[in-house]
Length: 366
Image (cartoon, rainbow, N blue to C red; front, side, top):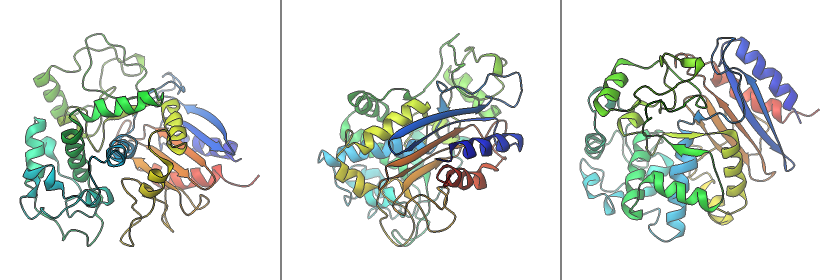
């Protein structure tokens, strides 16, 4: 296995300024190995990366939490993929969105725009949701794929209305049932709370500081020596819309350690969370419009972050903060890469070409 080659690539990426450090795990032939490289910030005196650290998983939240909860509810018969969204969220039907189905949300061909900077004009979760319900279609539903955070925020609303509990509560129940730990959301921090196990991300913005003051959240926690002055976001979701939504969102907000994600993948592949048949269906490419499965992405023929050596039925997802997970269902090999590439700035995009090289190194022949 090429884990040594991959480790060398990670070390070089750190030297090149792609990210300050990384924690990654790889499974091949049923054997799991974990590696830690670098530090939590670029300061050489900062703490080294360790396996017990929590990373902001960003859009990896979409599959680990939101999609998993949806899989569970569909398997329980609570709703069907081709049910219209408006059946559960009538307010969503306005502006020509009455024919959008749950499936459209999951494969990202709903017609909704990819992103809106809601944090610039909203400070409450309720008004963000109302704005999404009023969004017009960007393109006719089902005609192309536009990867959209709005799809997964809408799916969160469906999940919560059907289950009667929050996404956070439902996910926690599912994970407790299969003994998955170290995957959780965060809605705030108590005074003096030790956040040193959380890896710092980007520099905190003025709008975020104002929102914290308004809500009384993240007041004087202990950020640890790597971020003693609290200059950087730490233990708080990086995504702006998820921040306004209170830290629990369908598209982002989950924090996790390498052990938590390792156990999640093991439980998923073993059919412990939902059946193996359900996993197979939801991780299968759904159309010729894109590489999207249901919630998950699949390996595209060219340019995939999974590289070139993982199998054609591989599925996974990436996260804006520098996280990713890729799974090959045929070999049952998988890899999880956790970095804080947005530290100290999200303008650094060197991780994009790195990901494919990293995965190819892992599966390279000796």
